[in-house]
Image 1 (cartoon, rainbow, N blue to C red):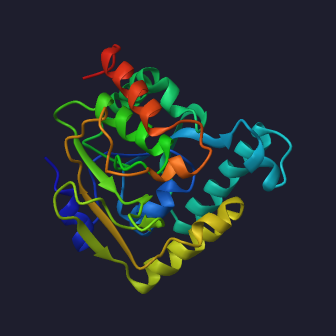
Image 2 (image 1 turned 90 degrees about the vertical axis):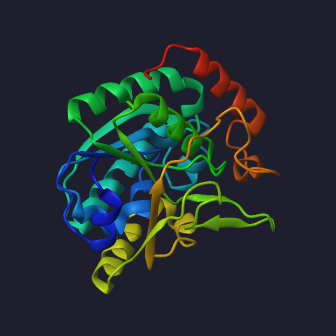
Length: 260
């Protein structure tokens, strides 16, 4: 089993094939942007196209259609990867933003095929924390798609803070102690430049820092139980699903035919 956490901590090149599976364009930069240069054989998978079909975000960003907004987000991603000086293999599973939860079995099957082709020894993805329904759906499909031989690691994202705000850059206390990487000045500058490429997400990304990144082995989740007590972050927003509805979808997906 590769010790990717040790490689990340010591900033060593990671030679084994790894898949980074995230919900939206920009999630890879938030979680792993300062460390992307270390991965020599990286498959970067986006579960959604980053464009909600209700068009509110598209119009706010100056686009008349979801397709135009999705294309703009792909261009932002390409610019960010160029800033990092990396060229991973890219794949998109094709779900609409905010709708990954409604297609988890099919998405898991598609991801399983990609992981087999890439021969991924490890996958890095979102934790199950109730931050965004697409993040939780991505965590589900990764766990469903991976074989027992695959190492599943998590990067930090965001979740509801008990005080009513949003916690970024740290995990819920439901797993092992994280591997926290302090980024160098050069890595911070590169990550800052990457974040700046996502012009359409500028207001959201202001809340994320560039000083450190944290990783941990994924806990064993019960996706039919709430990730934490109290309201979930996405329940404070109109993102297409409540926590109870999401858990019902997860229970149905667990009962469907998905990869083990």
